[in-house]
Image (cartoon, rainbow, N blue to C red):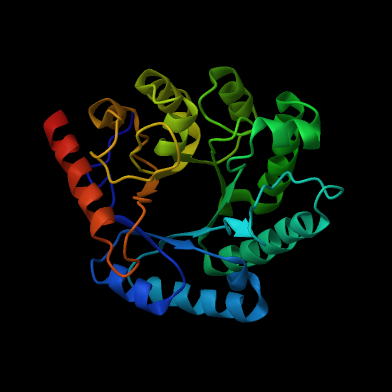
Length: 277
């Protein structure tokens, strides 16, 4: 694995709220990720997003736009069939096109989730079975890969239709030549808290990974813990990371105007890095 003395980066995440952004910029992050909502995909929202990106670009050019997580109270599943939810399907198309336009114009990255946490019952209802659901996701991601090029990346989920915990499916993902965003907690949860599966997945997918969400977890549900507070074995994870990628610490904050937990996670991983030398 190629080493980079500057990796891991201090990567922080915020909404497009100026107060949150100002708090993050106080610590001079090397990587900045915008957590967007449907409001950011309106004409006024897109204009505001561009202004906030311009502001952050005074500090860093390593910027990621995280596609909205939810729409009308439901997770944004990119493979949602139009016959099931035409409004969601239309939102996926329109919002992705609009955010990609911003990403190109501002020379930043757009991150899209391949899925979130669609349960097997929902997958079977919409697609018939998991295998068909996985193919629907790959078909959708193929489209956005071709449209987005070097400005788009795809993140894994805890849903069985787009996890990174299955080595056979991982091989299929690699064959599609996607630029991958790897969330450590999502893989750990999908692997039911198995560090062996997490480490194997990180090693297998490393050549395609361009961005990490470094997050701890107990491996049972989506808990987004600071590093060192869950069950992920970071001493084993560290050597597997592709150090040509970027990273943020996607930690749940009790107060969105206090990024202490994100920054403490960076300090924790720096200690792991130092101990590995």
